[in-house]
Length: 470
Image 1 (tube, rainbow, N blue to C red):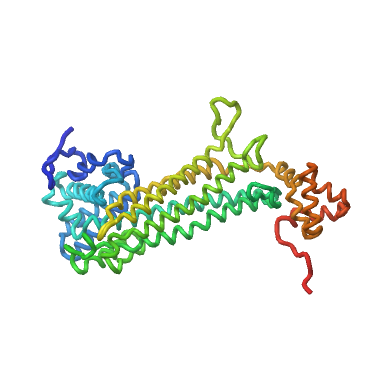
Image 2: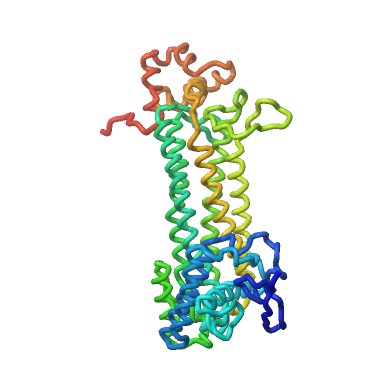
């Protein structure tokens, strides 16, 4: 392999000739390779956000007369290529790293510098003409460029999470419409409760998931507060007075997001409160999503000895020893992803608490945990929708039979028969293994016409008026 010699504080090192990254990235590869198994390049929105921040910084530095136009143009052109998805393989640093994100910041600095050098007609590594620190990182520190970048990346990725939630909600809502006339038994504490429709149940799932969209979007807006210009600890050392506001303006233009400069940069630099809030909302969503998947597994249990009210699409054989068995593998994998997201939230919380003084050095694991959660959710929600929910069918007769044979329908008779009569009928039906319907007729508490009227499905699944107001 052809190499070039680069040097840093620790000395000289051979870097692959064709690599756009440089010596500090190479050291990070050696130090942190395989720690999480996820590299920066595996999160394209993160790479895109890093490039946007470097672009905004270059524009601000040019406006202040700190770098000439040719270097500025080369830096911004390199950033634009990265934003368009090029050079994604040049970000091999593991997401979990020591150094509070310095390795990530230097990775983008070196890639941008070396691509800018090529655009200027020079060779990679000829840093006299465009330097990773002196030009690409000018007026910055890892401690402002790094958090601003992952703030932007979370905002971008949240849009993908929300888009998948909307698609999943639409899928449940279509099933709610399809199942609106399928009468079934509702259950509380896994015991028979009162009748409802399968459509009502699926509409409830749709609503439960849908309400998280507003909460996630609200939490994502917290990331619009950025600290570019804070440099090392928030005092703005090595930046000009106008730099922070100019950079914020340029970042708004480049990203299309309404970024605002934090009112107190010293407070903002170590603050990871937005991460805690957003991760918590992801956890909340996963608690609800996992509950929905638990319900799908219960409702489809059987097929002969379970509830068997719905059929999930069969995806693969379910056993290496039991012929004919098919398992609810898609809801099961969703459950497991949700468990992982809940665990990631604990990581975020503990890492946020572990920051000391003017910087939180645990930010890399916070970023990794949130991106990991978002990426898994995007993928698994697609699988749940396409491979499961879209193909669910109802066993309407099975649902109706369980309603008519249930003790629970006595609740619908309570306003007519009274609590004492209803309790006695329920107790007798359970003891004698007979239907409530037959016992009401046997005891001549209602005529068949009266009973059928009271037990009309439309009267059992919604409020109704019993008495006229005086």
